[in-house]
Length: 106
Image 1 (cartoon, rainbow, N blue to C red):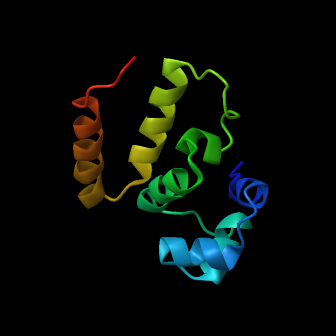
Image 2: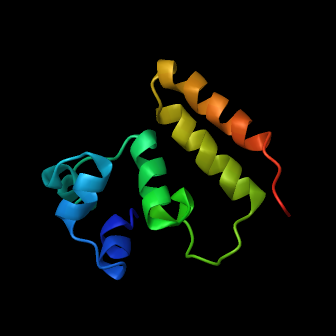
């Protein structure tokens, strides 16, 4: 279940303001919220960054603060990668590899 509308309303953001922030139309945001269309992976990343949540939370796989198993994350990444056009798979992989090379204070 895509939680965009729920999260947007919790944050008090209007569709038109979210659309402007993402350089999309209000109709596009509405279509995502109604499940008529799905955002591209690039848009999911922008949405997650905008709302400061994980893509997993946006997709309704868990709630903020819940622990997510490594297997669940692996499966989600696999499902997302399968949906990408071939030309975007290498871009996505490059992005993930760049993140993996960063130093995180664990």
